[in-house]
Image 1: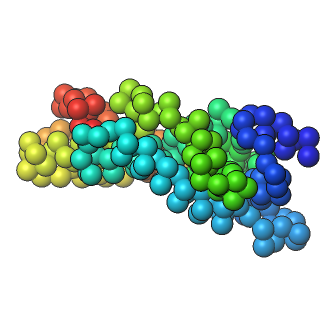
Image 2: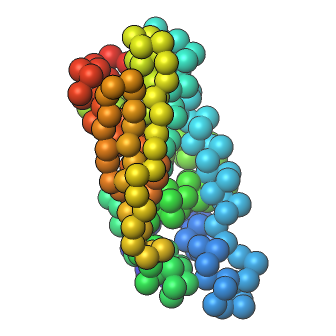
Image 3: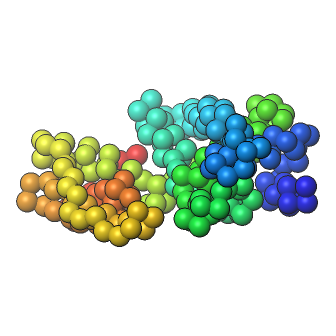
Length: 234
């Protein structure tokens, strides 16, 4: 209970029903090791939190970006509720150390894995919503995410470079980029993928721990090479 109180301080939200917070911290892997958690995990709360976050961010953008088109709002929302942003928020809170994971998940770096951290933030938001109401959930979510909305054009880590590159290439080259897997190295828990993006005679490579990230990095490199003003693409 002391650990949960410490987390509540970090969240700046105090639960009426702390069992909701405890459930939000339960990763499904724990059920593989401990029978009492076999049918308990944070996935239902994560699903709920995802829906609540979508509504809160869409409403915020609708109210504050009055001249933005539907397409621009959709693009901004997708970047704001993306895995990198939510994982970054979880790291700022220190949520990883409070998660209840299996030993195997811990040993493989689960406490710092982006997908787990992002899901955990959504689960906590779902727990806040169930513990209170939409207004409290809105206050909680925006308290952590509003800074990323207002500075999104400065945050290269969350810009969707694949989409930005594709729009630029379609407009200027009348084609689309292609992505090729050049190499895949390392054991399963420490793999590295080298991806090359190709547009006509232009090519750029990047290496990352998953294919999606490598594609984004290679697209970013090619955007830079082509002189794409990606901030103007929002």
